[in-house]
Amino acid sequence: MKIALQLSVHFSLLVFVSCYGSNGYDPLENALRFQRSKGSVLNHVSSEDHSAEYSNSKVYMGPQDGLKEVDKISSLPGQPAGTDFDQYSGYVTVDPNHGRALFYYLAESPVNSSTNPLVLWLNGGPGCSSFGNGAMMELGPFRVNADNRTLSRNKYAWNNIANVLFLESPAGVGFSYSNTSSDYETGDIQTAKDSYTFLINWLERFPEYKTRDFYITGESYAGHYVPQLAQLILQNNKITNQTVINLKGIAIGNAYVDHETGKTGMFDYFWTHAIISDEIHEGIISNCNFSDGANITDACYEYQYQAYAAKSNIFFYDIYAPLCSPSIKPPISGFDPCSDNYILGYLNTPDVQQSLHAKPVQWESCSGLVGAYWKDMPLTVLPVIQDLMASGISVWIYSGDTDGRVSVTTTRYAINKLQTSVKVPWYPWMHQGEVGGYVVGYENLTFVTIRGAGHFVPSYQPGRALAFFTSFLEGKLPTNH
Ligand SMILES: *[C@@H]1O[C@H](CO)[C@@H](O)[C@H](O)[C@H]1NC(C)=O
Ligand SMILES: *[C@@H]1O[C@H](CO)[C@@H](O)[C@H](O)[C@H]1NC(C)=O
Ligand SMILES: *[C@@H]1O[C@H](CO)[C@@H](O)[C@H](O)[C@H]1NC(C)=O
Ligand SMILES: *[C@@H]1O[C@H](CO)[C@@H](O)[C@H](O)[C@H]1NC(C)=O
Ligand SMILES: *[C@@H]1O[C@H](CO)[C@@H](O)[C@H](O)[C@H]1NC(C)=O
Ligand SMILES: *[C@@H]1O[C@H](CO)[C@@H](O)[C@H](O)[C@H]1NC(C)=O
Ligand SMILES: *[C@@H]1O[C@H](CO)[C@@H](O)[C@H](O)[C@H]1NC(C)=O
Image 1 (tube, rainbow, N blue to C red):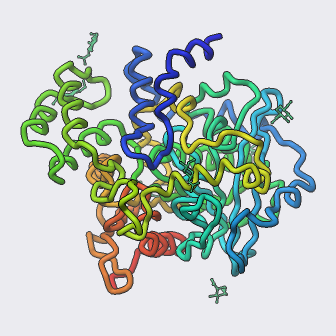
Image 2 (cartoon, rainbow, N blue to C red; image 1 turned 45 degrees about the vertical axis):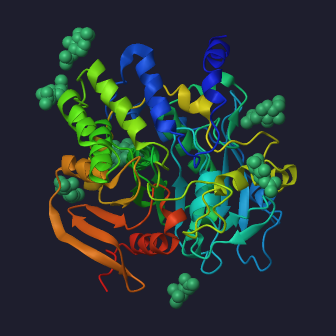
Image 3 (cartoon, rainbow, N blue to C red; image 1 turned 180 degrees about the vertical axis):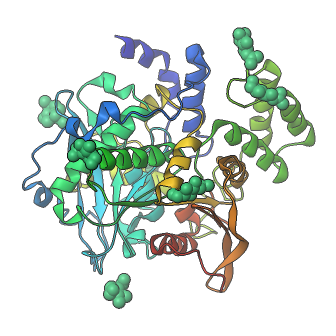
């Protein structure tokens, strides 16, 4: 009843939701708006310790025998000849009583798969699909061609050097679902718990990965998911006195980790990148206090509104990129700004869904429903990141420097708040004779920029993104030659 009512109220919002990549679509702002509309401004949930209520003994474990073979993809429709790696996809039940199951896609490495690490990739939103966005548009082995039917190989795919697991999270996103519709009112805590349950069960289905080096990577709102899941894994390893999951490190890109710096860094980026006027910037500086506990005044709302309007019709997630338009052919940058349309077409083809072992559904790049009813969203996850930094795993924060949404300015302000000291000062890292970006080695933290990349880093700068990812897995700072 409640859901049905909310559904009708928000229906007007839902119909505009299409693709993460489309111009003007901002799932994070939609979720923030919902938090505010509840009257609670934002939930002031801090980095509470939920491990006690969620120890390993309570994790649901389902039978996994024989399911790996069932999940093997014989081939994807339109896939190019000579595909030389194994792919799997399917569902892992995380709550049998509610009928809640998460969908994954695994792209193994063509070479050295049995020794390469296992890397989990998560997209954010909240509500956006890791398979459709992460795998098909960013770092996966294939890109969908303009015919919506055929695929081409991404030669900079991250599965060249790792076995990459894409998880559609939480339930209600992409192909993941629940038979209990109230499950779609979810939030950070449930997302972390379900992802953990998924992993424990998935490792039973794929036992060869149980002791493998494991990394978690993701972007945008996954700046919440990745640290929270990592913390839960480390806590459960400690409670059980076992390395249940062999977590070695995390990397988060253009990551939403702190509300205050998310706002101040964005508007400062707009001003320093000639997107808004001096007057609007000054209005924000003198009227807005985005820190935890402060009230947002009407004047501040008004100046924020003016800033969004002033930036006009540019692609927020990559400020210098062309928009998707029939006149942009072939794409100038090598990345086709209409890719999200091809992916939408491809993933809604019945034989594609069948080959993926997915339930027949209307697949969406981002779920407006899940994102719009987000229950718990702490204002900051910096304390969680600080815990991880002290835990000994490697913590990398990277940033595409042409993203206007979670800008590199935001990231630098957030790192300042972490209060860590510089060990290796700022230097340019090199890739194929050019500056790939810049690096700072902090105590227990590495910061890397990817030059000329927007929010979806591997889409715009695939070569630099793979070089960065290689350094991350090797645990070495990117080279300066
Ligand atoms: C959801 O319900 C369908 C139809 O009853 C059933 O086939 C499916 O197994 C259920 N999903 C889960 C995860 O239990
Ligand atoms: C595979 O592993 C071997 C042995 O570690 C290494 O020499 C080789 O470069 C690796 N190949 C690839 C493509 O990663
Ligand atoms: C883990 O180790 C501690 C200290 O040795 C012990 O008190 C605790 O019972 C152990 N927990 C489990 C689940 O074995
Ligand atoms: C912003 O609000 C916080 C919390 O209410 C307060 O501590 C701080 O002093 C305020 N900053 C300014 C510049 O007014
Ligand atoms: C914010 O507004 C509420 C309600 O008007 C008020 O009770 C509270 O004291 C204000 N907080 C600050 C930090 O000004
Ligand atoms: C591809 O799919 C998109 C989204 O469904 C659709 O708008 C477009 O017309 C399709 N293109 C082709 C060539 O079928
Ligand atoms: C770095 O890690 C060490 C040991 O794990 C810890 O003692 C130290 O406080 C950490 N420093 C920061 C800034 O995270």
